[in-house]
Image (cartoon, rainbow, N blue to C red; front, side, top):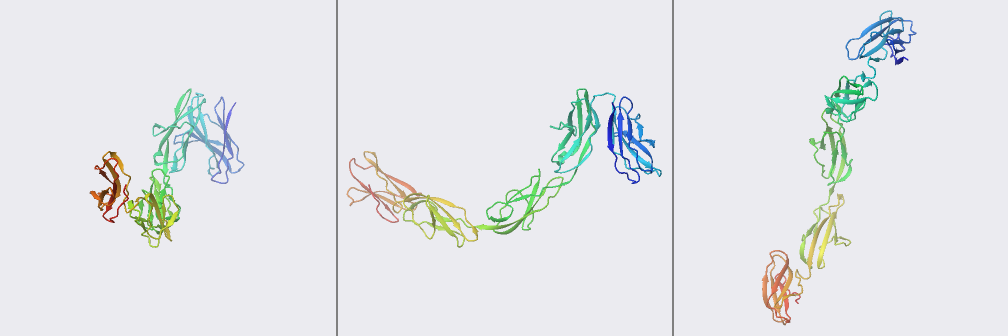
Length: 436
């Protein structure tokens, strides 16, 4: 039983001559070609043109007025191409019919390349596809090569490059094999046209932002470099998020990728709101007297300061305030019309009961020793005294702390079961302290 290939012919260059269709039929004898006769009365005859795929020469057979040609001159063991044109009495030819390919093999079932991969011109960042048409006893196995190296994962009759980059340019061919053997296609060249780099994305996308908000740029092209400028200042390479000063600003950016044209310009406008200055505690932290006032200041003119003591409610600062004895954690922030609220600042204080002095109950270390602990401040002098009747006081020691914090004195002249009283005199206030 014969096999038929059909092809619809394109419109002729000379509009007076048209060819409708052609078909190739083959069986046990040499294949033959038939086509539908033209109804155009100007047709004087038909040319059958043929050759070997990859060859630079094309042969011509004049079929005259016949619409039939035996293809006994087709090359065996090769892929032949065949097409038909019509001509008129003046020798003008029609456009050619569609190309028919005929693999005329005497070794049936061996893998054979019917149509080789074609050269491709692709664009950076777009998709490119190389493909082959092969025949032979199935199953057929395909293995693609680029510049002589196997392409990993390319095992179909088509090889698709989804995102073409500069490194994809080169020479591609395919090896087709089955149980009877293998064959190799001709090489196809993938050439590149310059694409256009992707326009960078600016985040956030504009509008009102805080002074400390980072502005980031992103381009998804592999190997891209992004450049930006603020308010028409010179462009610079983007390396890290941008921070803008208070005011109105325009950020413009573009991306550059090797082998591509420069991207379109991205442009975003921002209104940047200034940050209120951070409040400052005075004193800053540490050990203080319960009578010491804590002050808060802010460098932003007209700012309002809100502070929090431990986990308590918000307090609006109107002047120095005192803390009760003990450990406290304070937080504060500033707000001002036309400014973004400041960052929150925090500090901790240890507050003594009286003027910086705290007497801890006496601890008996041995029968003849007692320990006295109190809180002292750098720059002050503390006189430690003892008494047995609260009228006559004897000085035991004078201490000048090198740092603010806990001070200690051990009285080794104590007598067991004797009641003694102690006091500490602060040089700054000279007040007796509760004694035990």
